[in-house]
Image 1 (cartoon, rainbow, N blue to C red):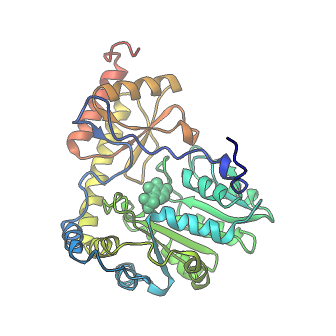
Image 2: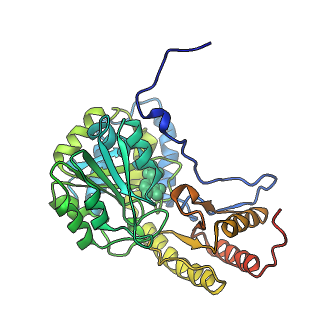
Length: 366
Ligand SMILES: *Cc1c(COP(=O)(O)O)cnc(C)c1O
């Protein structure tokens, strides 16, 4: 049977997103270090708020998310009227592309940039434009050089996933200042909370008319399974996004839980401190075993191996030992493995096993 139903241009070019694996066949005790999740989970206050929602599930949720936006505004010192909330920052990224990108418009991002930028661009019929990085670090002038009359959006994760590197606010401002008129710079701050004293681009997005910031509850807040993210930027942009946002895009449980989470900054600070300490330990332990990495500013390390073959073999070995890390060949980094900073026993275990592997003690890998 043939069907004459055809999708919009670009849809069939989209490669399905592959998330970090979460299981090893035949094991129930696998340690998952593949999705940059907070090993300590969410704050107790967030969990309590979630449980309470069970009693009000028959009611439709708020459509304007006023209470959550107010809480975010208070915690970050931002105008709640310039905030929009969505089902993960994924939804915000999609809303941006749906709103600003049409057939053949261009969207610029870096060579090791987050896969969702490409997917959302193609879903909107746009053309992804990938820009080279310099030593796995954003090259602002290369981004500026890639912009054309067709460019509508520039996506930049800072810190970036999966490289873990970041650029400073002065460079971000230089980028914003150099963009052609009509191009919106989207600074993705999914890992901003891991950087002490960094506002994720909030101040730039407050002051400059062409900067938009996205944030998420999926990483340091430990709520990846809940699906809540938010965006902040010019009032006009928020107004545009709200016109296509589903009125009930967030459930009561999502709203109440993330509101309790954002108000518990003690938990965020504790998780940042733990991550900073364990990340430094893990990076040094791996370097001692002959596996270097760039200085990470996020909750993961991009471990560099001698070759694609070695990275593949190490990934296979870790799996047989019940540890799941992330292959990043899909991010043009075939010789690397991205390893989430877990709790202390997980960090010790993965470092130990990689040491065994590098010392040739892992046995033949089929
Ligand atoms: C994990 C991540 C996000 C978060 O996506 P959610 O949809 O909010 O879970 C956004 N951007 C980058 C670069 C990420 O790594």
